[in-house]
Image (cartoon, rainbow, N blue to C red; front, side, top):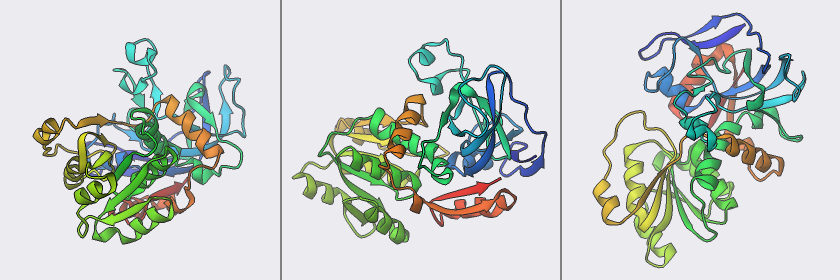
Length: 341
């Protein structure tokens, strides 16, 4: 089968390879991949900015159909439409695992970086890490379950927004659009910020439910937050751009005791005004990836049609056109680029 693999350290080092079709173990299912998304993490792996056990087949945002099931699997059968967790293995015994925080397990391995992932015709996963896709949810939409779950965790689990909170979302890309929708579901007043290059993205944020969408090169966002809140500032700021200027803005627009939430990777160390955070007693919260509970909540939201995902799928390429798909993702010409093995 064809698989897109990161072969060696250093920027690049990626090739479409022929590899054997995986055979599922007794407790695994084999999934024929329908769609697989390109994540910011994949881009960091390509750029040698995120750790991976090489060589490895990339990809962890996917949907597919069960092709075969191991001898011990009873919960799934061929033909079932599924997604799975990103964590492909965790020890199950440590304190983090017992608390449902498998991403923090010292032994955890994620598909697409620590073990072979879904940028391939087939992927095998543990059956207890897979979920059925609800009826009425397309395979294309389901392929966004992982990024949605990362945002579900940041908005509805790690930090619980209160109805009426003033929320600022910095960055109107895929993660910012999802965070904004989830914050609206939670009852917040949501402002999305972008730059002069983000005109179309800001317009879409308004279309998808944001109360305000502003160009930060023209609007004083700190003053905007004060006007909205009666002089205090935003209650919560989500950094969804992964750039230093965005982090700086998020910190500055918060009211004293406000909450800064980091959603996206920077890929490198950045300068950060910790003195400003300290003096204002602004709380810094990090939300990385998604746990089992995040996926379960996401699937409920998808089943209830609470999220608008169709316009966030920009293009779908055959896996053979991966270079163009990666180039489009790097150029930030849209939102989510999917590939179809």
